[in-house]
Image (cartoon, rainbow, N blue to C red; front, side):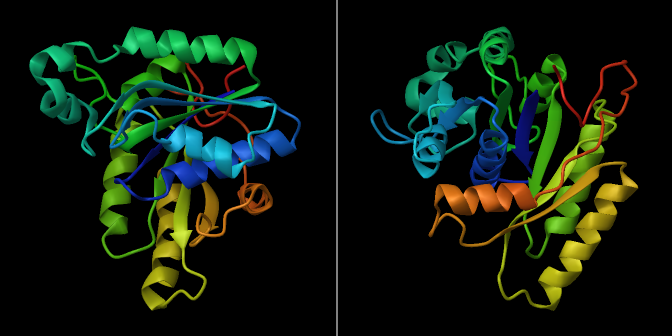
Length: 249
């Protein structure tokens, strides 16, 4: 199974969601690989998102984490490369074929591969302008979109789902990140509206992850949160004949 995790924006909880999904898969006895195509905002020797996931989960034997490339500037990948090393650095970004080869290699060795994007669905990963949406399409992967509970999320989520559906993702999974323990009226309405938005697009609603999960993160808390997320029952057909929103064996 290959799942590509993206978001409606940056800092919506993609890494926590990826960790929770990894914990759920590990708890089910599956071997899991997490791949971060482009890690930005991290210097050599520092822990990136993939390494944080491994640490949160206690570095289990059944987990492998990997990166395609890392860049120092906390920007979109192409911009980060441009600031760091000019056009020559942009040209050195891994291309779509390189990412595909890496993910497929991991898929041959692990039961589940979780690919966490940078930023949102259409943020460019490569010098050719290809995005995490293009990578998910090329992989025939199930797409997971993480949204946020605050003001503005309905528009951002609607635009993201519309773009995903237009690119052939007839179904996928929407989940809410960082839902507060004491939600106000706005949060409660957004929770209900996002669930309805997923249904209107033919997508699966997985539920919400609690806010503060990382501050007190443990393998148990991630496993509990992951198991609370509901799973789609089956893959839905796409117009190009490749299933979306389910699994890829």
